Length: 215
Image 1: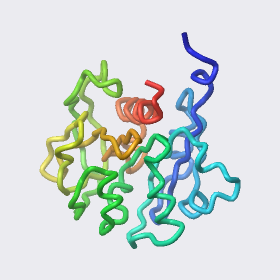
Image 2 (image 1 turned 90 degrees about the horizontal axis):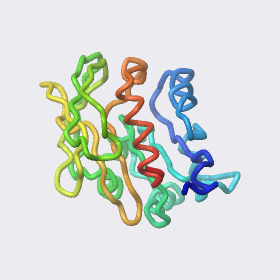
Image 3 (image 1 turned 90 degrees about the vertical axis):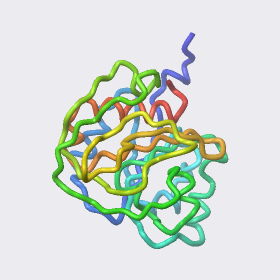
Image 4 (image 1 turned 120 degrees about the horizontal axis):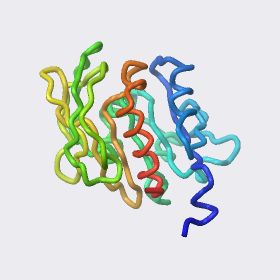
């Protein structure tokens, strides 16, 4: 039987910063997800936590692009991830954040995150693992997106989606465990060309639910 707590909307922090994006479209993407109350905020607000709610979120989605390795309170906030079992989602350019920081590389599941990027590509997304809760029942789809050329997610990751494209890394979505936390990583998600694809919206929604332990 589903408990009242399970029926309550998930409380999700969506952390942004240091990269421009379509603000109305991004808010609409999360606003249309059933069962999720998303609070879009920049990294500074998430770290400094004026309302003292950071530790109470069910999941946190990272969509930031800060490059300098964090120090002090910023490092401490990230290093806390995994201690409580809060779900973590690493979306698109957040995979490229803090490229020299081993802590973030360990969370993402890719040791070498040197990258190239290629905007305006047309890609076909294939389902590599149809048995996972995030991808169950999905079929391949096509969409426009910005792609990355970087090392693929390898050992220690469960690859869910792949892309075969000369200007893209092959692994497009994967899950892993970081300390006590479920982590879902999704390479896609630059703008409305991806956000409007039904397959993308389904995978991101389910990825958040899975990271939070809801599915």
